Length: 413
Ligand SMILES: Cc1ncc(COP(=O)(O)O)c(C=O)c1O
Image (cartoon, rainbow, N blue to C red; front, side):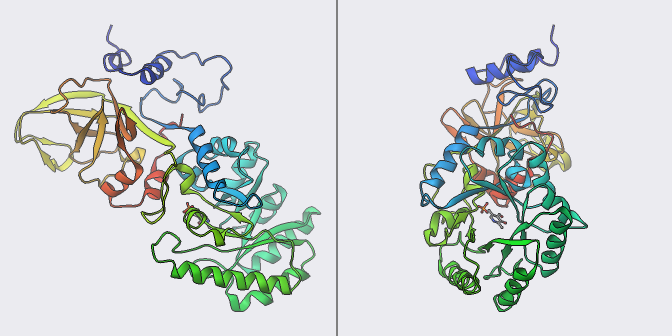
């Protein structure tokens, strides 16, 4: 009998992939695995992974990366993991659960991202970095999220929300130090701090800022921003704000600017084992995400025959073309140039336009490859590796965008 699953059998090569295959074929979850709709933490579930396209998240590597960042910090500095945008595509709830024992708190962009963490039982401090819309203030306060505020109107809204709930709302105030995105300008800080002092149900938990250029080789802009931030802290101290937890550093600043650690750091990308730029040394950090699938079809193409939409690629020789069940709807970038996948330990070119659900490989130089063989799009196979930076370069974008772009329909396992 050759059903769709049986077709994956011939190509299963190494133990890890044989293990995964067994689990795909066997619909019974292993004992002691939670019966979450997303499946088990270690292997995909038949309910979500009928298709073999999966992103494997190495939570041990994630924890070790957090420890590596900690090793750069004084023990008094808090580590708040940035897990916005579904933990940069890694799955916010699972990442939060994995990091809760080794981090002091989390930062997200949206109130709804914070609410999702609370609903999943995450009890740590959750800083909400972004904006608050239409009455979210009360829910933010009620769920014990810590909003970062940059707009005076929000100070009043959070104080009112706190008063209605019989609570004191702790907020962090964002100040502008050169990025010109969000933040109270230095010239208005004194006035804003005085307003905060007078608001009955509001407590200032800390001041914060964000660096625009901590990942560029020239330190000048960040040195200037640190000086501006230090001035803000001095102003707050003069007004009597003393118990503040102040923070500024993203991954690049956590690694490159120890003098920007203040009381807490907010790294994101480095936790996931990727560097914000080539100026940031991430030696020793481990990639956390591996994106793989299996070859779904192979066919022979004569010289001159086109492959995929628009015939953008034509065979120059008799070619063996493999099709993978992953496309731009899964977040594999449409506009890659000179991209490869790993089939076995071989780097094989991706040819023709990436489709919504599929893409094609030139397997001519991998003659022993078969339907069902594993193809790695990000990650390693034997001694070969495709990094997130490789894929970002082929797509003409940044590694942040590639990670965030891996879509919801790819199960994280
Ligand atoms: C306000 C803020 N803090 C921290 C971070 C984390 O940055 P990174 O992922 O570069 O460490 C971000 C990410 O964009 C951010 O917007």
